[in-house]
Every structure is written in structure tokens, then in C-alpha cells.
Image (tube, rainbow, N blue to C red; front, top):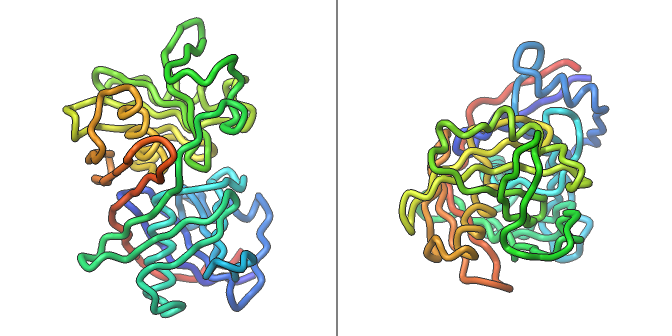
Length: 276
């Protein structure tokens, strides 16, 4: 099987994008892992598949597969790359589209400066819907990780996140503690573990250990979850710049019941073809 692809990234979070509009693409977990492999395949954090919409209000359907071959619900940096892809390939001339995901509809918009803003929907705090095994929906929860008690905020941005505030993100135990948190038994669908350093009320630094991908240079939904956490804890203002290792994202949230808006870059790196 020969597949044409586009390699893209959003603030360093990189993707292989496949056009499934004119061909039916069904890849096994093994083939997905090969595509994502940085030595034997193309190499990426996630694989994005563009498909025809099934929802009557959507322009496209958007599917996301992690590097481990598993399908997930949402990816913020991927949503921006999705918008860039369909616009660059002239699949749409709209500057704002409605995209169907596994978890609902999102609305990316191409800005005049080339950045892309995505309406990521309202965050979810109910433990059962994250899903998170807890006795309450308190903003701050305790989690036992390898004999250590850490304080987290659990929420969903269409996918589950556990955010903790750290004093120095560069020395945070992302690789070790993040890996343990990802598969913590209180998160039945695993979790993205975020480590947030507050710089001031308008700036944070963030690192995220993602489900099925490990630490990535940037995580769009993780940036949204971190800012929402900081606002709920009274630590941040309503609009925040999030510095990740791959670049800066701007996140805005007006409070409970309102959607989170994420703005950032989406870059096409190269196009190619791979024989699977």
C-alpha cells in the first residue's frame, strides 16, 4: 500500500496528515506505529486522517491516532494543522470550518496573520465524564504516584488531563512521574499529565506527557487544560501565553460554561509518499 502524506507541526507537536476524502484509508495499529516511527517510518507524535463529515453540520471529519496506534478523541495542535491542510490543499475556501471529531464538533478559523484559532469547546470538570475516579469534583485533588502524594486538577478538553503546578518546569519529573500518571488506575482511559509553571498572571511554561506519545514539544489541549486550571485556582487572568518547548500558544477562557479559544501556528513541513 502506497500512501501520500503531508508532514506538519503545530509548535513542534508533529503530525503525519492523510487525505481520506478520495480514498478509503484503513490502517492497522501496526501500520500506524510504523508511520509514526522516527527510525523506520516518517516519524510523528500523531497521525491525522481527513475524512468526509458524517455530522450534518460539519464540513469535515477529523480522526486522530497516537504514535502507539490508538485512536484518541481530540488534539488541539492537530486541529490547527487540520485547518491549514484543508485550506492549503484547496479542499475548502472557507476561513472558518466546522470539524467533526470523536468527541464532538470544533471550529477552527484561519486568521489574517496566518495563525489559526480553534474554538475547543467548554472544559469538563465532572469526574465521571473526564473520566476520573474521585469522590468529588473539587478543583484540587490528591493523587498517589509511586509513594508520593501530588496535587492535581483533573479535567477534560475532549480528552482527559491531570494538571499540577510546579515551581520549575525544566526540572519537573515529566519522564518518570508523567509516565506513571498516564496509566494511573484512577484514569480509566489514561490521561495526559501536564506540568505547569506560573511565570505571572499572563504567562506560564508547560510540559506535557501525552497518552500514547510520551512527552511532546507542545500539547494544544494540554495548554487549554493548564490555563483553565490556573484560572479556576485564581492564579491566571482570562488570556494567557503558554510557552512550550516547541513554541507559544495563546489561550483565552471567560469562565465556567464558556468555550476555550486556542490560537497558534500550523506549519506544513514537506509532502511525501510511503510504502506500507
